Length: 133
Length: 256
Image 1 (tube, each protein chain N blue to C red):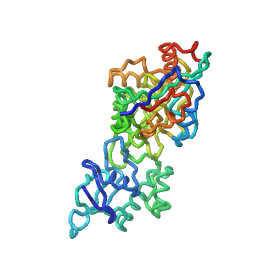
Image 2: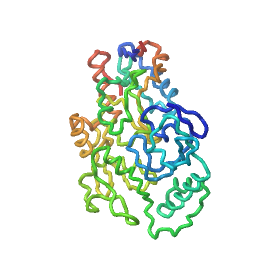
Image 3: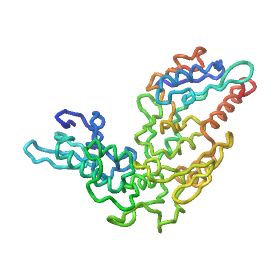
Image 4: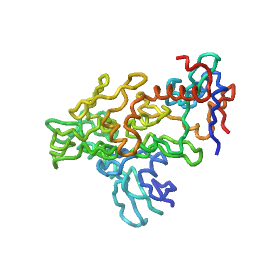
């Protein structure tokens, strides 16, 4: 199964991944709701990409009381099902990496879903800091 | 297994309900008490359908949210009889919840403008769908339940005002279809069910996270450490970035 491989030392901090993510998930509409974040860092110029690790033993899945977060066996991603969500936001509090958020505007959680098995961020990353391999 | 809904043959997975099969096929069935993440209840009865196991059988009216799909079932979702049943139900619901926009809209869609019954003197907008109590039970708090019976039925705390078991997660208010559960967030304070909680400020940004009580419950249920819940997602991402920077030794740290 392919994974989203992140190589932080290659990141140039251009944040194209955030834009690609925002455009491929129109429900959030804005890079502020991007499921990937590239933090710019001091010289040497670069960035630190932070995106869901799709943990094997995921805290978000563990705390969800309604199975709104489940493993997608095809893509390997932890998928969010908004119809099953009761908005307790336990997953947001439980993720040790901050890779799931809650959007008050759409009343939905947002997290990386690997774009259903073909992540856009990896396609647009100019320095191969993000690869789908 | 294959069943027929409104003359359309549809495939169903084992364990699926008629409502799930219908909605997957894009058939619009109204519901008020249904939530995909919670146990089916069959309370509002708006999702009723007519079903027949044999073609020469008289159709049986069943709530589709509780009826399991069966091979060869013949189901109708919008017969004149069903529309009449739904209109009557919505007419009755209007006496309880005249202030609910959702119910007003559904009623209008079924040709009911104002209720033809005697309106309740003090309508509460609560329709006793029990989505809140089921959400509360799913969270594991069991702080609210139904109380009283008949016209005096209501959602209540134990002994009317004992909010000790509530953890202030806000799930009940979020799932309520008529928006009749009051939840007020002001700064770090959250008031619900007459009790005011303090949400713990994020260690990084100072923004509100979850309540200490909610964290204690999550910790008890999952074994995760209690003090690990009090950082917002954005704050956590910053911490993650800092950890990665230290691990791979890039740059001199985050710029901002």
